[in-house]
Amino acid sequence: MPVRIRLSRGGAKKRPFYRIVVADSRRARDGRFLDQVGTYNPMLPKDSPDRVKIDLEKTKDWMLKGAQPSDRVTLFLSNLGVVEKPIITEKTKKHLPKKKAKEEAKEEAPAKAEAPTKEEAPAKEEAPAKEEAKEEAPAKKKAAENKTK
Image (cartoon, rainbow, N blue to C red; front, top):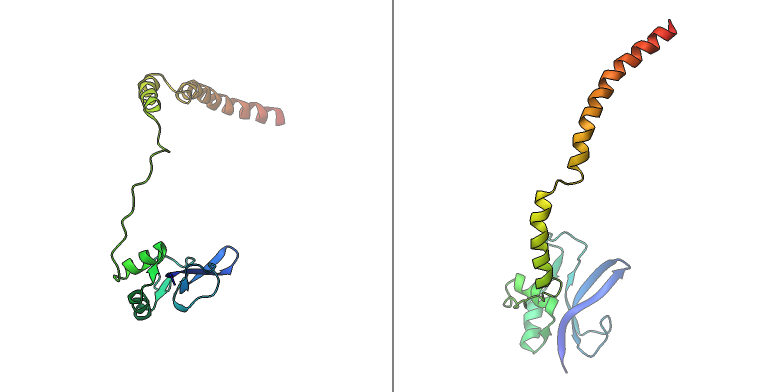
């Protein structure tokens, strides 16, 4: 019987809680299990000691009997120093831009640096307009005061 140490989900919708269980690998994820060896609560902060609780004696005993931990449980056990940390494979690079796109971006970068941006040009034109508005404001106030008198 192929036995795995894996997570069994519980908790409410959008509020996960997992039990770390020893179960037959052919059973359903949340189905019947042989033994519960710990809990995992991903809703707690990462530095919280209650986030992952594992009974190491039970876990080691099951591993000696031939139970294989799942990838996630292997990470938990490696953080506790029970097993070696698994090798993380290299990520694919399909999301990165291709050679042509990189070359085009390099060509466009110097052109953008030389030409003034749209934001800079209007800023220069607005400065004199603001100064004129400041000069007109006191004149308008004086005219308004004269009308009221």
